Amino acid sequence: MPSPACIILAAGEGTRLKSKYPKALQPLCGKPLVLHAVDAARAAAADPVVVVVGAGAEQVRTILADRDVRIACQQELKGTGHAVMCAEEALEGYQGDVLVTCADIPLVRPQTLSRLATEHSQSGAAATVLTTICPDPTGYGRVVRDEEGRVQQIVEHSDADEQYQRIQEINTGIYCFQAAALFAILPRLSADNVQGEYYLTDVIPELLRQGQPVAAVTAPDWQEVMGINTRAQQAEAEKIARDRVCQRLMEAGVLLLEPTSTFIDCEVEIGSDTIIWPGVVILGQTQIGSDCLIESNVRIENCRIADRVQVRHCSVVTDSRLGNEVQVGPFAHIRDNSEICEQARVGSYAEVVRSVIGPRTYDKHFSYLGDARVGADVNIGAGVITCNYDGQTKHRTVIEDGAFIGSDAALVAPVAIGARAYIGAGSVITKDVPPDALAVERGPQKNIEDWAKRRLEK
Ligand code: UD1
Ligand code: MG
Image (cartoon, rainbow, N blue to C red; front, side, top):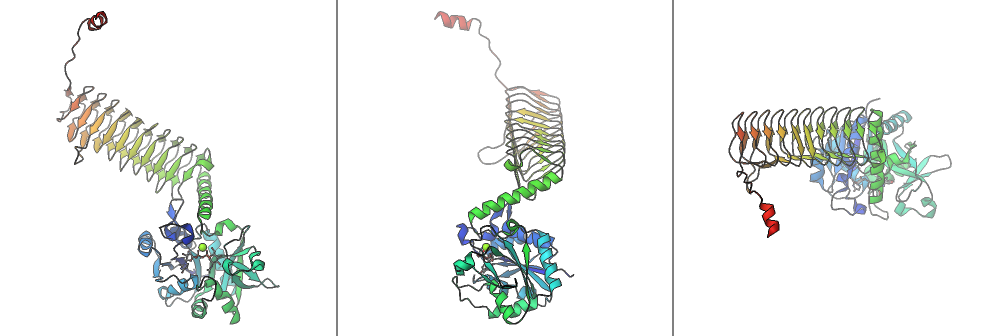
């Protein structure tokens, strides 16, 4: 069977979400709705894929830039039937079957789209509607069948009388058509309904009127084809999408101690035998290797984390990379394109920003390293600060291999500490330190004998 084309309707504003952002860009599991729909169509081998954009067209286009899709523009939002008409030009000359789906149906599985396309093509119907039985069909178009069970029409909720509203079988908003039959019939639609729109659903009775066969396929799992029209539906879909991510990761061998309290975005990859504690949030384009330990209430966003890494309680790691066997936290903050190399440790209340920390370097307590390049086997004492900002510009600190930075030292950047050099505790270092030197910068200590005794006597 040749693969079908696909049209994705994504022009709607999403009025019912009461958002200032277009519906196609609403996030679900860390990814805009429209990309869920595009990726499902692509995974079902649909080609070409046309996305109809309208509300927020420029932003939606930008999001789609790295996907292999054609864009069609719907200037005025005149309904789903009109939106499909707008895609005709992008499919000019195309003769086969075409799937139609919507950006607001993000959970549909590629297999379901494929099954719809296969059954459609085998039945020889001009149109096949994907339906489902929904416990609460409120808001959806109802599927009206005759005594023999043949689909006759779809009645929108707002156009449905009480008798139709009782029907639990709904139109999912996903269809497969013979492209030629679809585009021939679209100009016949009228906007004579409660919403004053050209409904794609009206294609069904029009085709039947012309004596063309219409079929239906019923999806067994209504949640997979739910539409996102309200914030409540968005939250429900979010939960389902997150459950799926957890399932996928558990099948890949990840130990999620409490999946229901774990928030993992849909594109995150995690290796086997990694243990994820409750309350963990892992977002964006994050990859975590195997045998890692991610303790409770950790937040990781857009990071690459190698194998056997430990990220301990309450740490936040953003846009950074952690090498093999790195240990971070508890309560560490690593951000903005930092790299912690293998076997290094960044301990409690340490912050690392735009810095590279070399292999086996220890930075274990209360420190701030910003715009620093720290070599291998360095010891950063408790409370060490890089003074990287002079009020106007950020400056770099370089610490070469094997250096020892005493506790509470302030390194005023730009400054370089040579290999194996020692910095005395409490020093404020403003000049470069040569390799193998000791730099101390602090007033000589004065001991005043019996001072405390004399104070008491007074
Ligand atoms: C639609 C169906 C309804 C079905 C439901 C399933 C129609 C008339 N109704 O209703 O039968 O049960 O989906 O979720 O088709 N869009 C455009 N341009 C427009 C209008 C809409 O691109 O002018 C897009 C929207 O961005 C959205 C999709 O089409 O992705 C569906 O539109 P929406 O307004 O959500 O229709 P529903 O009321 O959900
Ligand atoms: Mg909808």
